Image 1 (tube, rainbow, N blue to C red):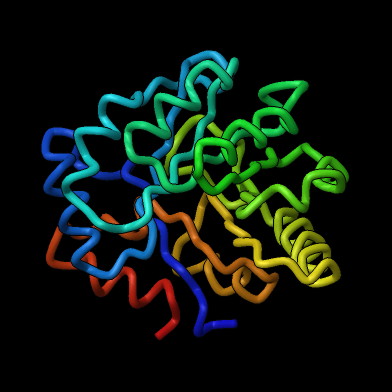
Image 2: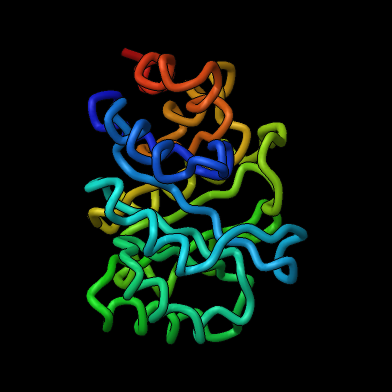
Length: 220
């Protein structure tokens, strides 16, 4: 699986004073996806950015914009993020009682749909939407802040979801987000993750280190 590992730097760890330049630099350095963490101060205890910022960043990279909506309610904002240039829109299963309908909405706008599970959310919520999702995101920390430590129990969840994907024979990205660094990355890969969200681990050391950081996370 190592040959298919994708790195999705989280711009939450970028220099917000020069965000466009940071997105361009991390793209040039070899990022596969640009991971955009959207937080509302309600569903999670932090506030980050909205669709206008995504729109402003879009010209700075031709990479896949992987927009992770940690917001509730979520449906009223889906179209705005789609129009802003998101390629993948990931919503939280916990953010709405109607996430099947939300996934339908994302797909109707021509975007790839992702669903995210918090550490305490069982994988059983995925059973009736496996045919609708292009990405499953396992939160390996409780969402809301960058720089948290990886929760080891996440590895069992990643393994179980990988088995679900393989059993159904579906082409679904299995993404892990939270505490990914050089100490935790191999365990996540071994468990079955093939898209790794990393904030500090990709942006540490400044622009001259971005390519080296991404290569190191891929394990080659």
